[in-house]
Image 1 (cartoon, helix red, strand yellow):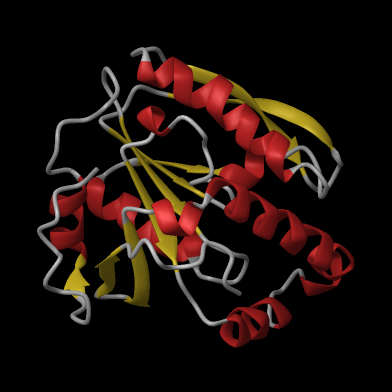
Image 2 (tube, rainbow, N blue to C red):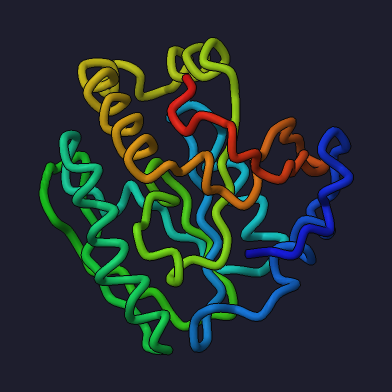
Length: 211
């Protein structure tokens, strides 16, 4: 768990360099790779945040969506992440897992995940890994439901996503509730901009399934 050096900055946006220093300030749990999971419900801005964070850390970025084998298989995607990516990396070995092709609806080419110094994983369920010894830090991106809904309505793939929207969200809520992801997150992320974000230490009274 990251050292609480941002504990006094719950309402202050900090820049990407400061966030990166904070998240890499403690000894890593795995043999060679520090793992940072970015979680939150659809429309929260996880992908954008994780991409910016990974670039600031010169880290490998893995999208959990690539491991989920279908609209009704989010939990299976988390299992594939755990067993085929996190456990090998924790042991200091490169990981190999196949990507799911959402257009063709089938398993596609393999993904090679190297033993890089830092791996950022983003996606709904990324922080729901049961064995927290495999993940150095979990960040929950927190955005009001009305904002998330507006973003989902504006997606370029809205027509493809719309028939599965409720099914997907039900799985997100179920995973977050069972894993207490938000309550167990090391930081709650909000106020994300090009220049940085607010990282608030978690509060144990927060509800993991608030939406």
